[in-house]
Image (cartoon, rainbow, N blue to C red; front, side, top):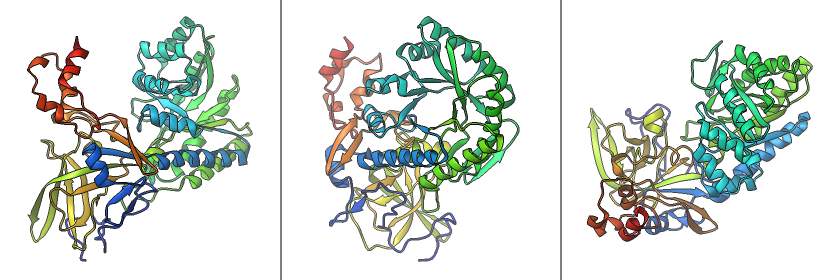
Length: 489
């Protein structure tokens, strides 16, 4: 089929618009005999019938396997060069108590960046010593709670936090392990990186200021300096950016050794995944080997001992394990000159996937409840919000007979979709369902209209229509008005 001029150059018209690209989908994704997509042995129509749409779906086995394989790859490669590695799951990608337990089961620690994320990790039973606490503006309350419960590491992000963490640790009678976040001057994105002398950003401290700040940390009896931390970007496909950053960090690391021990070095995260057929991220095994070689070579060149390395992957573990299921509402062909783009509107949108609107992120889509021989048509998957920028999939191909009532599924939505979800236009945030071995269960309950109204202090619950309780929006659960009144008394 000829290329539609309205499509981006990287997007080719497929011979079969029903095919699932294994690089984009959870490992269990396949088409059943009826043509429906199944994830974890559960079909899309069954999921929609039971839980409603929109619906986040996570392949539990896929997420657990990715976590285990990543840890094993880094353990193997860093053991090869003579050191060890600590893997922290970056909870900001997606966090629930169940997912936190999956990560701990796989041997990972948990990285949080707010009091709320800390509370979820603790509620999951994560040992505080396995938690790292990030953030450029940790409140005094958050710092106090972190030191009180025994969080393993706090990442100091600014000079003022040295005093705040030291005071909290003293108050709670502990010596708090800390890292100092520095800007190495390397910014990486996908396959490109830029090395500069300074970065104008809210995170971390200026590279040249680090020695004085480390001296200040070491002067505090209630603080124990573990090492430096750096995060160079997100959705990174290769090791070049890490190589440049590690070289700079280890130069500073070597300088700091003159003033005392520096047992660790945290290289951050940002490993990329495939969202479209144009994406080609490096395999985790290649990243692990490449990073180990970089650290080994740079330490040997400077004649310094190998530190314990820490990394913070999130998206690369949970992103490919998740998909989002929608129902098609309207179809609208839009003619532009001699060409046509088919607008396919779904029952969700930027409230459940803000990444396209925020970052111009690209996603892919497939019919989820059937296969068809219809010719591929260029589509744009539009949300239902009152925003022209409410687009979930900017460009992909679906069978041209896509119709209202069809189910469509967007892959690679496990990271930064639920985490960034909102109630824009008073849509309830969808449920999150885990699927494994042909079974599905809710791991995060979706929101009903009653849930939304419960926060409005001006609502008189005695006057609520009981009809509102029938709208579950993919919750897998409802709350009655009587229950709502009881909780507000």
